[in-house]
Image (cartoon, rainbow, N blue to C red; front, side, top):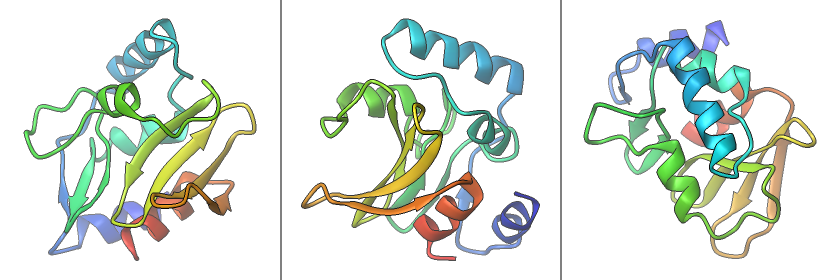
Amino acid sequence: MEKLIEVIENSDYIETGAPQNAAKARIYGKGMVEAGFADLPEEYIKFCSHFNGVWTDGTQVYAIDPEEGFLEDVLAKNDDWIYATSQQQLVLGENDFDFLVYDAEEEVYFMLDKDYGKLGRRFEELEQAVAVLLGL
C-alpha cells in the first residue's frame, strides 16, 4: 500500500480527501452492516486513513463520510447501486468503464464493467485494484 500512497501523494492530477480517522471509519462500517451491507474491508479503512477518497478526471475511490463536496460517500453510493448480486458486495469506486467492487464473502476486489455487468480482473489486494482503477 505504501507505494500506491506515495504515487498518489506525488501526483499533480489526483485530488484527495482529508484523512479519515480509522476508529470513526470502523464505526461507519458497523453502521453499513446495520443498514444491510457488508462491513468495510480493513484495507479500505487504511487507505481512507491516508486519503479519504480520491478523484481524478471522472475516476474516484469513494470516501467514508466525506467533508469535501467533490467526493462521494461509500454508503450513499451503495444505497444507489443496482448491480450487486449479493449483500456481501460493496462498490468502492468507479471510472468511466468499471466499478471497483469488494466481495466480502470471497475477500477479493474486482472490476465490474458498467455497460455489460461483466466481471473483469480480480485482485487479492486493494492496492492493485486502485492502481488499475486510476490507470497508474
